[in-house]
Length: 317
Length: 95
Image 1 (cartoon, rainbow over the protein chains, first blue to last red):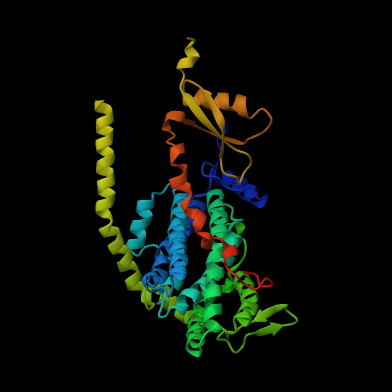
Image 2 (cartoon, rainbow over the protein chains, first blue to last red; image 1 turned 45 degrees about the vertical axis):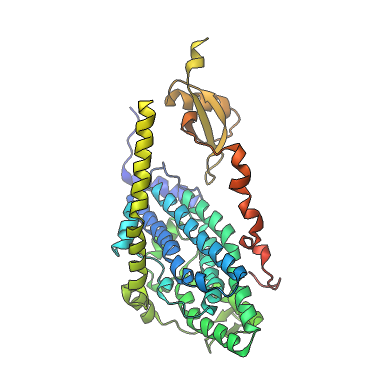
């Protein structure tokens, strides 16, 4: 008879495997809490990609040139693709995409709070590409080393595809910044509105992030919220200078002893409000997603009916 | 005709090491999934090529038509803006 293992000894072996940097693959034994944490995190990430299509999609019909329109279409199309990679990664853990979609539509799973802010002007498309995608890339680069194999591989693919997202945003803002006075002001206004929400994308400070310790121990998370945020700030300040735009933080400045940029306090009250469902666009985002799901139902039904008829034809032949 | 000719064909996928995705390495004949895995181990992993095997019935693999190659795969050719090198940004910035 093969030896039987207690969950406790299995958990020890699991932790040892993680400690020696082994990836976890779908068929491996894993603690239930690792599985549920992973499902929640990947689902939340997938939902963010899908909901994230809305703020920018809002500008596709109003892009100022064919070139910009083609770029924006390609970018929003990428977000859809990234959502699908991620749902597929979550499905390797034994959930179905439909369940996850239902949880999102019922408001029982979250997406990144950044997508609850409105895109008021064309410059917002640039600010999202530069700051929001810049922050997302910083976070996702760290996740290419996450312990769950299918998630890590999806991240590699996504990061490779996403590098143009940030550059197109930077280029768009650079053009506006060097344009007319009104264009420059529009770019500055967009940066003023997106800077702080972008910093919030990394999540609450480490000291107030209850799940961080376990996620770090399981190497789901490889770099802490505060370290990622710092990395992003250090990278972005010189870019803002090159753009000729100001970041809206009077306390922002180089700290010689730390070797990093200092920045001012983040309004976590606002973060909690938006995460809690009271951001400017929470209701709109979910209702648009719900409408898309309902209005697309007949397509899914028709595809299934067609498939059924083909099957019937094949067995009749 | 020997009996093994009746055995269905299986496509074999190997994971080289942990962290990598399974990749197609070839095919073989076997009467059932269990023997397909066994045969795949003998045939494709004699030199430590893999640490995990997937086998899939070849008839379950649906492939694109080689004649459609142009219409399917040419469209991205004129979409250079999907690549980061399309955008001019200062070289010394981490973008």
